[in-house]
Picture: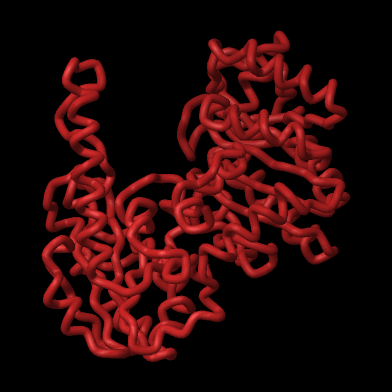
Length: 416
């Protein structure tokens, strides 16, 4: 593959897969432009060289149908502002041949939402997986996906993937399109390079002690991640709702706390595996619980093995935080994914906020820290700590799959 730093885009048209799936309010205004700003270094490099830009992205889940509320036309002005130049808009991403051909050096063309076409995701529409014709429909869709990808590829001379948030999907624009460019004309953008480097830093080049903090609501969504990390970390902190499955599996009384009974054997197996591998697994020992799932509920702090009937654990208690602080501050590498409480409720956000502060303090002391996942990122942003950790990942799902040990199609298509 080519390297974006060494590549000269002068006189070339660059097809760039960006992640402009930004949140919009009811009036179509962008409420967080982080993803647009994240792509700017790559885009400005191409423009500065004298190349022209053809930008492609998805927005939301239109499921292969045109949805005006998910049109990328709504963000064209914001992209123009970020790049300090006009942005042309192609209202049909598969019929932009003339608009692409007419582009002059330094000009920018934004294509309409890729997912208005089912070929982008490459999944049969309206056919259940149990249907006898599903396999044949899937085969035909793959052929259509390749044709769609070729249409996109024909717009440009070079392909740049800078959309880490979708790197775990083998979509037309994230992986298949790369097949139509030779190794010297496809590359990762700056944002993708940083993401891949950050994950390599924790999975392949970690300094020890290495601590992973895994939170969130369900064990089922993070089980593969936890298992893969057991071969890499020295300390594994498990917090949030998923911790109650581990507590109940050990005979604890968890009241109405969130848990997954069917995964209790897996939880015990994880604990046993951690013991065998010499990994210190740290669960919450104290919880702030509530008598209902509400920000305004009554609260009390109790031992996590003795939550009263009718009450549910909502946040990490101070005794838990004291233990976790000591572990985090003694670490040289830190990976954090997922909150340790019901972060969306202000009265139960304290624990997650404290974790953010501990990670920032450890980073200040010389640790390398990678933070990823919606609520974890929201926490470091909320407390103004995003610039005090080593790296904040833009792709929660992609980061999780990379941590699971999976190969990301969007990266493999270029680095094969």
